[in-house]
Image (cartoon, rainbow over all chains, first blue to last red; front, side, top):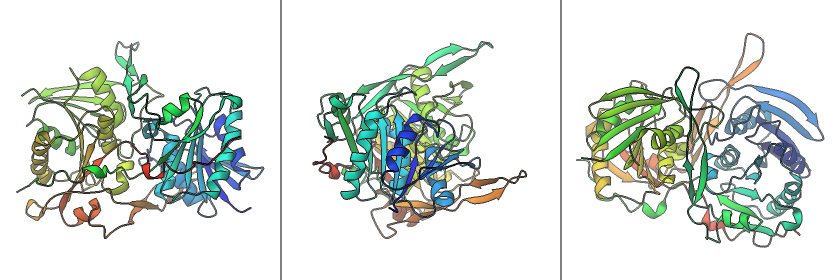
Amino acid sequence: MDRLILVTNDDGIDAGGIKALATAAALFGRVYVVAPQEPQSGMSHAITVKTPLRKTDHGTQDNITWISCSGTPVDCVKLAMNKVLPRRPDIILSGINHGANSATSVVYSGTMAAAIEGAINQIPSIGFSLCDYSHIADFTVAAKVIPIILDYYFSHPLPAEICLNVNIPKAKWEEIKGVKICKQTNGFWKEEFDTRIDPMGKEYYWLTGEFENLEPNDSLSDEFALKQNFVSIVPIKYDFTAYEYLDTFKDIRLK
Amino acid sequence: MDRLILVTNDDGIDAGGIKALATAAALFGRVYVVAPQEPQSGMSHAITVKTPLRKTDHGTQDNITWISCSGTPVDCVKLAMNKVLPRRPDIILSGINHGANSATSVVYSGTMAAAIEGAINQIPSIGFSLCDYSHIADFTVAAKVIPIILDYYFSHPLPAEICLNVNIPKAKWEEIKGVKICKQTNGFWKEEFDTRIDPMGKEYYWLTGEFENLEPNDSLSDEFALKQNFVSIVPIKYDFTAYEYLDTFKDIRLK
């Protein structure tokens, strides 16, 4: 088996989720983990331009090579492809994220940004998230689901420009109903900054927020599927053009 | 005139581009600038979750209030809406970015992330970029173009879920041909990390890269328009679902 698999995440190389994903990936090929040395949640598609990157080798075991990188998830993908992997990877897997990346979360997620970076580079890519934010989350169900999805994907590949956003509900194996292909749920975060006063008397603000689902009854949406204990898969593209509005601005004149 | 306008960027509050944008915006209403206190290029849609945010008041002049924020461009939008503005803004303007945000750059851009954050919150939003990376770039042409675009936009508004990615070519006013509504050019960055050795003998890597245009002859693309000295406008949506692939995975079975 000579499939070459790059695994990364945004929770960092020490997270339980990436260990579960690397183990699942190793069933399908030679695995290189190149992951942030520290947690990088909420980093989206950020890249490091002001400082250089560093990497640290953590050894190879059971056909999995472990390398940490000082940068963001997207930095990890770029560094792996240019300075780590022996050749272009056959697939990039990101996660398993500790917490959902359903709905509009995909925009903020470092886990999904790594998968989108794969797609931009025309490499098949999948991001996996478990709907459980705990750093000691139980990945047993995810460890059963992911090989089934990978097995199906390898025999039914999509164009490399499309990556997948897979979310796994927090539920027991017996409770999981199946897999549903979905659209990204529309919604936003209702922020309520937690305002505090520091010892010098100056205000500072902790970002907190709650997701407001704008289409809770849309049966095509990933939030809807997850609530019913389906594994949701959203096919994602990185062309953000709203093609239905290309007819606007036709009569604007500068001079 | 009681239009409330939020201005932000990713080059930081001291950049020449944001001064030009705030001045242009002030022609149309009351302006609040809430911008990063330091440059935040390449931060994409990153949000600050591990540390709290701070803001600093820099005073009000000519109907423009200047406030800097310790976080990312998206943090600036969130903090402004929750802790600065007297009410929900009528429009969010981001930029003027020092350098193009055409093509796939939109995915990495902090400037465009701020506009996309506006769209997620259902607020009309526009990101402006000048195709000149110099920190002493000349914004004279942009200062002529932007009021014309804003004037048109206010009388021809789009749904708030759609934001605009406006790029202005580096050219003289006489050379600018007009405005073109475009699609996001498909392409990727061919990275070539600049590898160096530190005084301790350890490698480190500077991210460098060159854009590879995958569709240089597509006359609908923003890169094509910019090359011909048109101002390009790409309507952008934050629903990343690739709807044309919702038919896949139909026969996957978990059990």
